[in-house]
Each structure stands twice: as structure tokens, then as C-alpha cells.
Length: 102
Image (cartoon, rainbow, N blue to C red; front, side, top):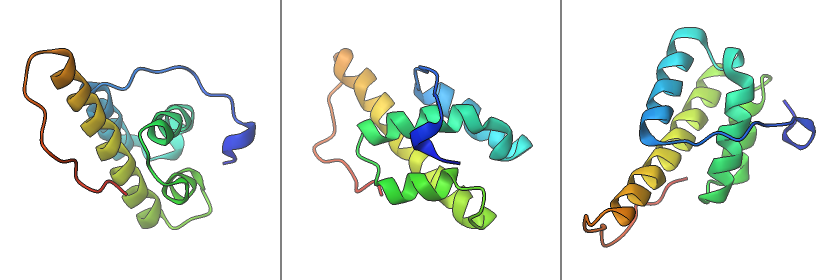
């Protein structure tokens, strides 16, 4: 899949939405959710996930295990940022340091 030519929809990725997507990917496989994966990749770019990880996740020609690992890294990074965003919006204390995310 080529990110540069694929139109993505605007999707708000909350921690719950990422969990729902992960469950759908487990059930149906990555290719069944291509449009949502492109939207996830757009959000992941904004939170600093490396482009090579996103390219592997979106490339149907890559081995399935590599794509799933890339999806896991991407989903974790986006969910982590969504949860931290909620913590900042509320009055919960933020963590002192973020883990390396890919």
C-alpha cells in the first residue's frame, strides 16, 4: 500500500479506539482494515513513530509477522499518546519521562 496516494479519513484515536482496532486486526487481519491503518499511520507520524515502521505495517508484500510487529509498535505509540493527552487534559500527574516508542 502506498501512503502517498491513499486518501485517509480523519479518525480520532483514543486508547479505546486503538484497542478496538487491535481486536479487529486480530480477528480479521491487517488487510481487512487498510483504510483505518492509513489513518492510524497519519496519527502515528504526528506522535513520532518512525516512517520505516509505518511502511512495513502498510506494505502487504512484507512478511505477516513483521507487519503485525510494526502494527503493535504503532498502536502502542498512538494509544500511549492518547492516554497521556487525557492525563494532561485532566488533573492527573504526567509521567516524568516517556519510553522510546519505535
